[in-house]
Length: 115
Image 1: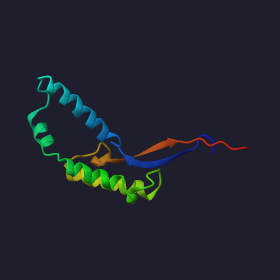
Image 2: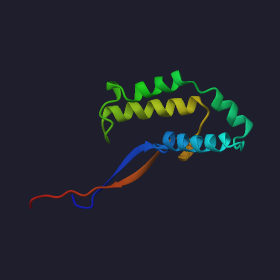
Image 3: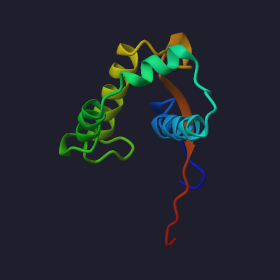
Image 4: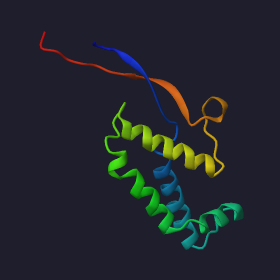
């Protein structure tokens, strides 16, 4: 169907880990330059992050169990549920309705045929 759209659910902050890492890297670069840019509560939380914990999350999200993270595949759902569960455990709330990390949106699709 040319110009067809479909509804889908996804994480609001799908790229949030990368954005957070970039923001933290920029903050650390300024801190190395002698400028203390992070508020004390954030510093305390960052100091609690352990490499082993990050590796555990990375290993699960890149495991065969989450393989096939394409739209509509079981691996995407497992990865999504894992991220929502952990974001909730960390006390975060999503920007979706009722604080949800999930929201509906339309994905425009276009297909071509030989007709």
